[in-house]
Image (cartoon, rainbow, N blue to C red; front, side, top):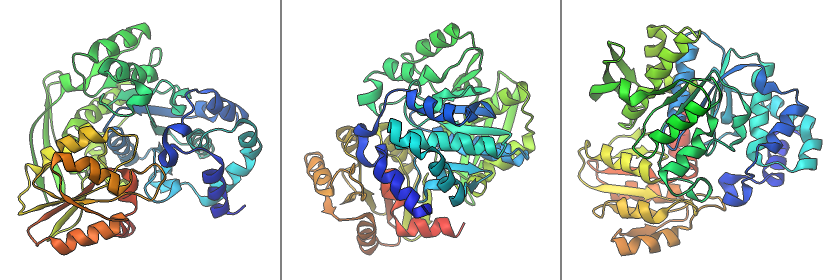
Length: 437
């Protein structure tokens, strides 16, 4: 098989959550363990950092990878899902794994795939671990797919675990209370391995403390140790002043990830910077600052509050759940515009009702859907929105929806595209921006 035939085999043969939803979930580590055992357990052949959380885990993963790259480490990065190219999931120092590797890997384990029928995610996790081991990375940053306890990535023994936050997402799998979801995500906590908690509340903190104590591991709550005292957006960067009374430290950093919600992520990134230094992964403050300023350039990370054009301003963001949409609405309060246009498409298994209730009624809506089976049809999204006085029209794909928004908008208007990472991936203008960076 060539590369395209190999991908066709993976997509056709293996159940894929991003396309079909719940039917693809295999709530067990068994298949991943079988695959990795056949490969000689590559997950044990490199150091790793494990990152879970409802929101912010992608940004945090890419920022830490960028920081480590600036220190001249050879850094593996595993994330999901991909936007455009399958190989975005598996990178070393910002470069995707080769097509030849994907082909050879699948050929090597095809007989196991036929035998145990793993999920798409289980195979890609094993693929990433094998690639990082063969390429002898110094350290790999591994992003959890969903949850933590039963996520396929949870067969690693990292040197550091990070849980960014707890919010309501994937509740049909993880539970419908903060405590239940926190328990699932805290499943990545390992005996004697330090863990950093980015955000917590009264319901989640006791869960983290209990599980950390059971595992005899150091636990640090980043939001208790760091505080953003000032931030402003200038020249394409988010300038942030951060202080820590705990460490008697003050820092000024520039982020090329400019969403205001990054102010929540910076605490856990700085805490990780200090913790990694304390356990022998030396990182200078210069590398910290350069890594935060060059995350997109170093890792190819897009889709988080990316400005595609000005006049009218077009912003895309992969926010797709209650907490993510809340952060977008918060950022909108800092932007001056004449009229607001929102291009939105969601997937069937999200809590669409809660998201709709949050959206502003003064905006003009362009309801659409991604070209995947899991997508909520645009007409259904519109029907759910009408009782909440969200007015707009339906469009068969995101590019037609965006074209209509651009036609209707004046130069002083603002266009937001959000609701699903799969929707963002299909934007032609967004793909052009990626190819020119």
